[in-house]
Image (cartoon, rainbow, N blue to C red; front, side, top):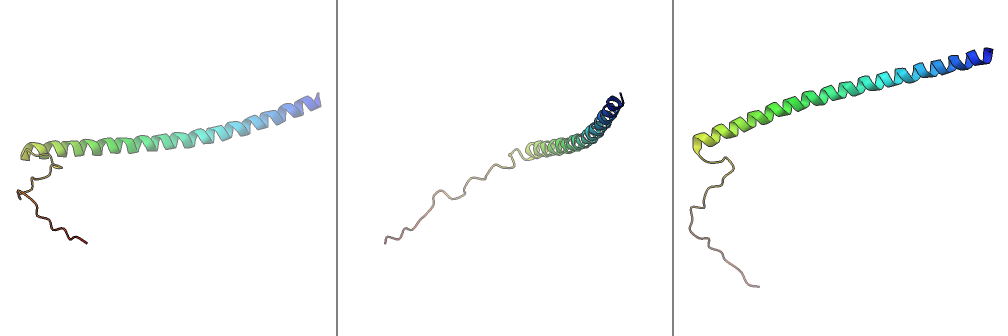
Length: 83
């Protein structure tokens, strides 16, 4: 009977240790998920701001900001040196 009680006590202590470890791990995981959610929200806000800026600049000038201008020269002259 005494051995049974000792074994149960050891198992209970091991279970407490595992539970403590799992709780610590879960707490760290929750913290990381919260951090990722916060950064995601910040990125969503920044993307929204950029989209609004692009929409505003496109409406005012009528030209997409990344659109290149046409080359004002009709042709290009090149010189080739033969070797």
